[in-house]
Image (cartoon, rainbow, N blue to C red):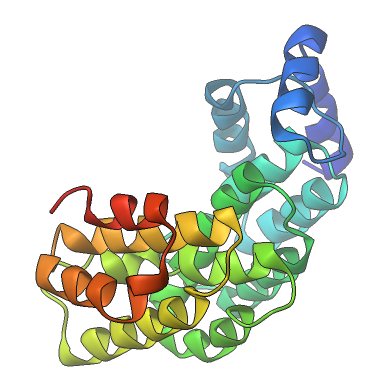
Length: 225
């Protein structure tokens, strides 16, 4: 399976009316085919079957570079996998290549699912992600929080994981002054997720470095407390 054939399979499912609706909703200037996610997933499963990791990376790269909305989501799903025994560095190189190109939440969130698996596999990569939190591009800054959500979900974190979690909270604290809606939303999302496991830490953040959060982000952070 190559990217040309994969794109043809996606295009066969195109719905022009829904494509127009999606373009108006997502706003990012690219081709939309109007395919619902449940219809993309079976194709991805078919492509993954019998394909080695290197082949999936090649296919994902081609789909991503097509700049078709559904193709980029399919690319992210092709590389979303918890354990990869071979070509791990190849997968990381590909998913991190996408980050500077983020320009809309749906594609960014699907890609961040692939990225978070690679971060969990090798937490030392947080050194690189820390730079994203200070990037001039809003979508890259946002990715630093969205891709590290697994650290907010830990029920019984080890000492090392607590340290990593505090490091990420430090990035969030530094971003409190960023008034962009998507950044504020991402901080609130991260804190709300953490509140299920450590409500006291979230309260301390909101009352401390998070005191300057926009009201909607503050409400989001405290919604489950």
